[in-house]
Amino acid sequence: MSAPRKLGKTSDQRRAMLRQQVTDLLANGKMETTVTRAKEIGPMVEKMITLGKKNTLATRRQALAFIVKEDVVTKVFTEYAEKYADRNGGYTRITRIGPRRGDAAEMAVIEMV
Image 1 (cartoon, helix red, strand yellow):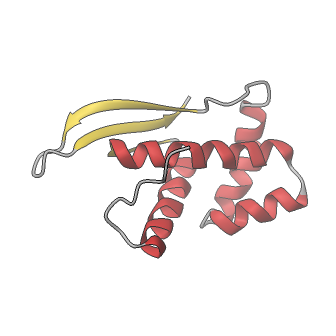
Image 2 (image 1 turned 180 degrees about the horizontal axis):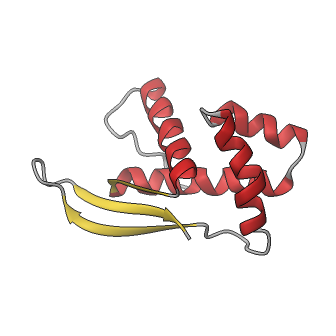
């Protein structure tokens, strides 16, 4: 298993950024970010949906500890859990969209399948 990407931030800043991006992706279903951030967000989103599929009090509390907004947790445990009930993983898709204007960072769209 490889080490997590540091993304040019300290550990507390990185955790806060990833929590917010996971929350935004689950709330909107789609977001545009850099490829490396998208690759970090993907497994975290998959874990949150897996927690939603288990649907116990303990898993809801685990999701609430990571996801920033309570209404997004409710959406995960109702909508996404039903939608992906028969699917074992692979809930997100990363599509590269080319370089960003300004610093030429490789951009991608990460979306729910």
